[in-house]
Structure formats: structure tokens, C-alpha cells
Length: 451
Ligand code: UD1
Ligand code: MG
Image (cartoon, rainbow, N blue to C red; front, side, top):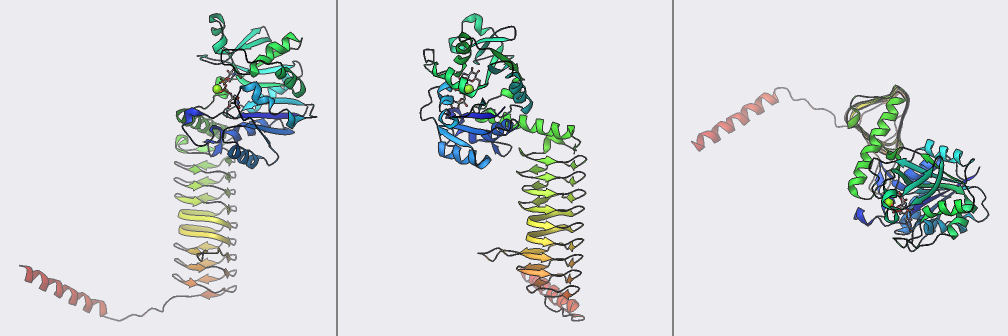
């Protein structure tokens, strides 16, 4: 069955008190919109349609960053959820698969739940995702008869008896796309809000002899975000769940609550994550790697057996091969460390390739930026870069080459060569003793004058 996702994202989100459209506020480094779109990806949708309104340009740019094929349709006035879905109709002309409606501000819907909905569609014309609420508050209520869903009543329009129902509407709805738009055509706005309710399609469907049912999920999955407080609560919830999922899959955390993950962090089995590690977007840590305390990683790939930190910083394009070591106060950006290479202390490696088993001494800096352009440093295999070497790029150091400590290397160093680029040492015997005596006498004289 081909699927079209319709993600509603036109609302303003007044309570966010923000210039940014609500769905673009981030959880674990990704806009909420992407969380919803990612969950929907499990259904391998043929079409992704985002209904945008407030801040449509920004929403469109973000949706296309997630998937360039996404179609963004405009809902200029927010006349209700049915009206929002109706805006997607022209974009689905000629499509005869299923449409699933998601909300852009509901980031926690699980993939399994959407799969269950798609499965339920083989038996029912309309499938609604519902949940049992401890406190049903202002959610729409699902009126059922056994497995059959009879209708959905909005809180504002519900009778006291209907308000006692604890089975609530999440907002996620699935139906054949043509049928969905046909049902929506019959929706009116004669209700307490004067809005076109998507929820009305259930009663309309039944009146036409179509069937409707409820797939149930956990209330936590349907959590929506309306304010900064709710956003921070959603972030915390995401983090707790993401850590738990990783531990379930064999990742060790010494202090899970102190580790921050991004929405797309991938960590392999038997990797160990120490305290206070922060993951930005796009990080993969392979099996058995160890990320030590207080490290910060983004856009990085860490291979098996590598050790990172404590206090290391991996920036975008950091590519650490197997058994590499990156130690304290080392920053790596857009650079590959090949198998067994080590940079253990106080180093910046940017725009570089470091060969197998090469050792980068403490304090080494790749001087990659001339103020206008970035330049590349290449270091061969089994080289030894002496402490405090400045590698002024563009520069290439050969295999098995060495640089002397404190060198400023501005020219290429061939294989097997030792390069020294520093002032020659001068030693003056007895000079220090004489100098000390002179300075101490001077100090004594000064103290005597002050008495
Ligand atoms: C909706 C449901 C309610 C359900 C609740 C779950 C309807 C009529 N009611 O109510 O049954 O329990 O969600 O959270 O559907 N939106 C648009 N354009 C519009 C209106 C809304 O894009 O014209 C988007 C909003 O940005 C939001 C989503 O649709 O992402 C839901 O809209 P909202 O106003 O929050 O609906 P609720 O009143 O919460
Ligand atoms: Mg709402």
C-alpha cells in the first residue's frame, strides 16, 4: 500500500512566545517537525506533504532539508484541522493510496504505532489513533461501541457524559486518500469553535456505511508541545528514552542522566560512554569505542576500539579509524585519523589526514587558516610529530618522518626525514648563577631604601 504523510504544521504556537514557528523548535537538535517526519518514514511514504501557515517559508526550508522531495502546501488561514488537511488535496491528485495525518508538534509517535495503524487499515476505512488519558483534559473524546469507533466529539462540544470518556483522540488519522478528501468535503464548521474539525469525518464515514476503529497507544506518544516548559519536558523525555533504548541495545553509560544525545546519535554495542558527554547531530560511535568524560562530539565518526577524551572535542568531519586515541583538550575538525593514530594532549587538528600509527605530540597545531582560505595538512604513516609543532598548511609530512619539538613547519618533509624549524639553542655556563646574584642584590637594596 502506498502512503502519503500529511503533516499539519500551520499553527502559530502563540504560547511559545517565539518568532520561530512552533514546529521548528528543537528537541535533541532536530526541529519537532523532523521528529514527526522521521516517525512517518517507517511507512516508506511515497509523498510527504507539510501543511504550513505561520512562518511558512521557514517551515518549507526545514521540511525540504529533511527531505528535498517534500511538498509544502500553504494554509493561509487556520480554519481547523479538516481545512488544513484539505490543502493537501491538489498535491495528491491522482494518488490512490492511503493518507496518514500527523501533527508537526507531536514528536513522539512511535514507528510501531504507525505500522499498527497501517495494518488496521486493511480491516477498516478510517483508523484513528487514541489513548487512555489519566486526565483527559481538553482532548477530543472517542465514542466507541466495542471495537467500532462511532464518532469523535471535541471537548468544547461534548456533553457531561461524553466528557467522562477517558479514551482520547491523538489527532493521527489514516484513511484512503480519496475517501479522506471526500469525507472532508462534507465537514461543516457549525460547532463551538466555528472550525472545520477533521474529527467530524468519523461520524460522516459511518453515516455512509464505512467503518472506523481505534488503534491505541501510550499517552506519552501523543505528547504535544505548546510552551517552552512543555518543550523542555519533551527534551527530557526524549533524552530518557533515547538513553534507555541505547542501553537496551548494549551501550554502557556510567551516568546516563549526565549524557545528552542528539535525535540521530548512533552508538554501537559494548561502547562505553562516561559522564557528562554531549552529542551534537550526526555522530556515530561504533562498537567497543570508549567516550570518556566531558567530551563534546558533533558530525563525527568514531570507529571500533577508539578512545576519545576525557575533555575531547570532535567537530564535523572528524573521522577516527579503529584504535585511534584522542585525548584531553584535543580538537579535531574535518580530519581523518587513520588506524592507530594518536593525539593525546592539547592539540588542534583541522583539515588534515593523519596516517596509520602516527603520533601527534602535545601542543601540535595544524595552522589551517590564513585568514581567508583553509589549507590541508597531510601526515603520513608512522610519523612522529614532536610536541608543540606548528604545521603551517598546506603542508605534507612523509611516512616515518619526524619533526622536532617546537618546530614551525612550513615546507613539506619527505619520507623518513627529520625536520627542525626552530632557533638553535645557546647555553652560557654559569650565567644563571651570576644573574640570580645580581637580581637578589638589587632586591635587597630596594628593601633597605624602603625601611
Ligand atoms: C486536536 C483534535 C482533538 C485532539 C487533539 C490532540 C480536532 C478538531 N481536534 O485538537 O480531537 O484530541 O488535537 O492534540 O482535530 N492545525 C493547522 N491548521 C489549522 C488548525 C490546526 O495546521 O487550521 C495544526 C496545528 O498547528 C496543530 C494540529 O493541527 O499541529 C492540531 O491543532 P490544534 O489546534 O492543536 O487542535 P486541538 O484543539 O488541540
Ligand atoms: Mg492541540
